[in-house]
Length: 87
Image (tube, rainbow, N blue to C red; front, side, top):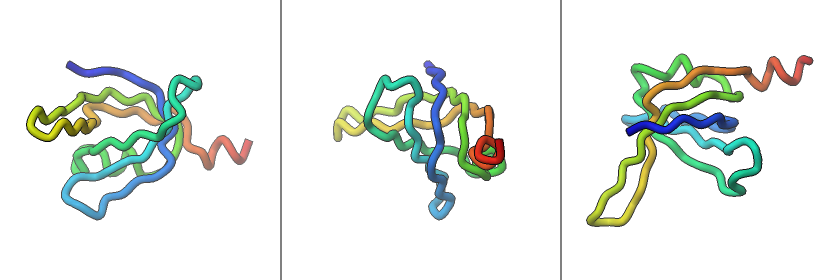
């Protein structure tokens, strides 16, 4: 099952096997930042710049460790921060 959310992606890393984004939910629903993994082959060009994104994600939970992680299933750039700042 996937969920859909609009987020501000503020950091992107492609150093490891899977890519990783750090994002903040929009609309004041959460004060915490959120990390999500992504397939670098599929999404490296999508996350080439920080900005506002619509993201479909799935939740991966390990019963053994109690650890939850999130995986990007689909992502669409709404607007890059560089474009917003230029006005």
